[in-house]
Image (cartoon, rainbow, N blue to C red; front, top):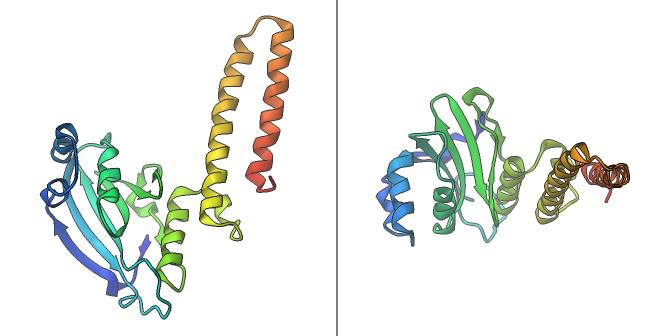
Length: 209
């Protein structure tokens, strides 16, 4: 469930043209707005005033945009373009039939897995819009176990996540190489390297690196 206060609801439909006419896009990407997107709705507007926040921040507004898709395999560059070309902080709720996906752009695009609407969960936490924004990014970009490391900054958490994903990819390649290697010495060396990488991954996932 998306737990945003009633005071933040806007439910304002935004024509697709309002985005791509004001963005610097290639002709091919403009066509994706037509082929991939059915409609865009600004569901919620989070501001200091409508959330009754006492503390001010440099962030003045966070919008929840609901994007209804014509196909599930959409061009993700559309989301990046909208986020980069908008002065507000944006959280995206992608929908295709009964499936939902959350997305947010923070230096790069982060996406959740597709899930049924009933399992979508996102909430607000913080006493100013900057803390609320950071919390929203964490919920979408970072696994739940990583979120528990509250003493880490958002940038540090995302950096740790990138390291973990790189290691996971490296481990997959090593496993494939070790499985296919026929020479005993090379196979042993690959397994030693694999063991080392797995130990490093375990340390990172525990947050002790």
